[in-house]
Length: 255
Image (cartoon, rainbow, N blue to C red; front, side, top):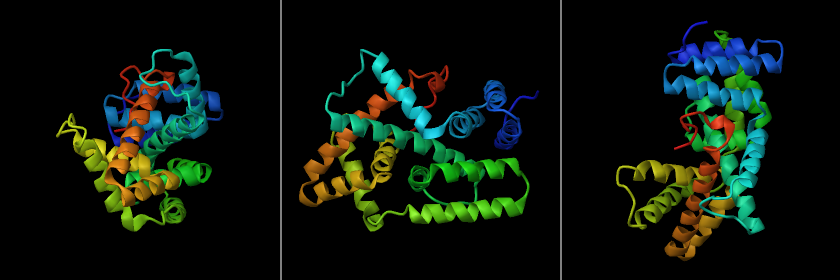
């Protein structure tokens, strides 16, 4: 069994894993191949493929978070309000969908969409997206299969396009201002943090609409809502680092 160094090696390994006859065999071999990865990118790709294609996707990750939340007593934030508990759960799924969007980028390199749009497609039609990814991986090198799958994925992405798309720039600017206004923002980290906060807001129409409505009436109110989202997202990320799937180096945090 060879070491995995490149994107192509990781794609080949994923295809071989999916060809195995049972889910148990797939899980064992996936774990072994992840250990054989010499670089971060192929390791993260195979880890995310395992979560999406073998271990149950968003539902399984949601269950792990709930178990972690019940087991940990010293969280930086304790969520008592049912509405905030639902928001915490929604943000967790958003972070997971952003992870799976990276799988789509690797399997469908010709699909040119921002990560948050791919994540919306995952949240809208996870089962179909999973089937498309599996089909392309299993048919490595078959252009016809890849072409049909890509066309189907493009339809799902189009269906997931938000009605507020023309205000995406305003939402991104609001995220940037909110983070910059905290006073302690690291200038070097600000672009990445801004992108993530925008993505976490934009993948959910209700969340985006709430922030945009607040923005129309008060920039300060919108900033407060966005900073609350970031606080809850940090709580989710602290849970992710304590779940078994996080990996020894805790590298499964989306950024």
